[in-house]
Picture 1 (cartoon, rainbow, N blue to C red):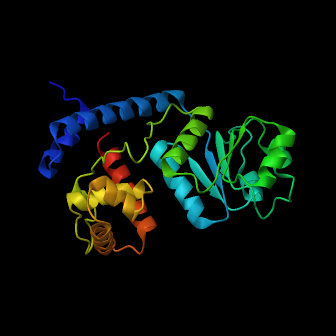
Picture 2: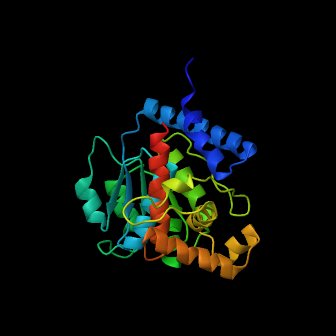
Picture 3: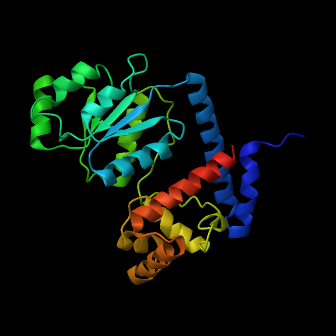
Length: 267
């Protein structure tokens, strides 16, 4: 009898206390992900996604979020528009561009013209909603340009990126929810932090780390988990120590990488 692949890797969750109800939810999520990846494969979306931003932390964060939403997308990072233009393959233009407005090689007021010249018809998400951006876009009135603030809440930002990927031809990635609706989807705690001198995280620490990845502050995590902010602060310190990372961003990146490895191993 053939076993259905997405269910096999879930049995270890019983060891970390995942309830049967949440186990069924996890099964449904994995089935949907497998269907999504199959659809992406059939669609054969070979066109890459461009991220153009000269701020390394912002660029890194955007790339990680895009990887979470579309694991098989080819993502290229650039710090200048000219670098992206040099990389451009006319036979396979980018399916989506996520870019800052204030790029060092883009003169003021010429952003839309340059993107129209080099990347016609490509959906563009602009990580800036300043007055200058809105003024230039209002003159040109092009629907393919979408603007949002870098301070956009995490769950809304993922929705914007998801909609951008859809407009670029990708099959609908997994929908996101607001922090108030989110429920942790644990990667088994024994798989987080293993390697070298790292200690594995506890189930509670993985839960805190997942909320960190969703962009929540210590206070928001404390309110959600019904514990004190000081307790969350202690968990965060212990997480950083166990993973041997310097800050919350590095911890989130480490966790996303571990989650993707777990995801690929289960497919």
